[in-house]
Length: 146
Image 1: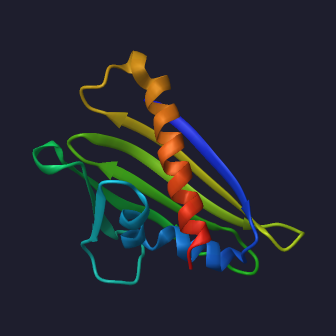
Image 2 (image 1 turned 90 degrees about the horizontal axis):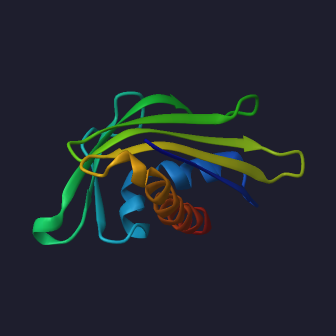
């Protein structure tokens, strides 16, 4: 399993960073060759299901995910979200956390454990590095865009 973590400090309040990172349909706007469809009615909560469809034509695959923990940030607590990836190609879990900093900015943590079927485990370091790069660019774009 490939494991990676991203950390960012952004000049946003926690609720704004949270909203930008957890509006799932926006992920399709920032991840190349990906479209995201939310299958459950809003608002997001535990049990929300969405699918990221990635690729081109016949080389596309679905990456269904379910929100298994949902705690938006409050004045007293950080925001925490857990996702389970339950596809035939991509499996694993992700955790997103936003927490206020004393300087008024927000600390963002994105931790992911990722497994891609048919990719042998000796390639996990390459998969982790590639995913860290792709997800890092996506997180940066999501956090920059209202």
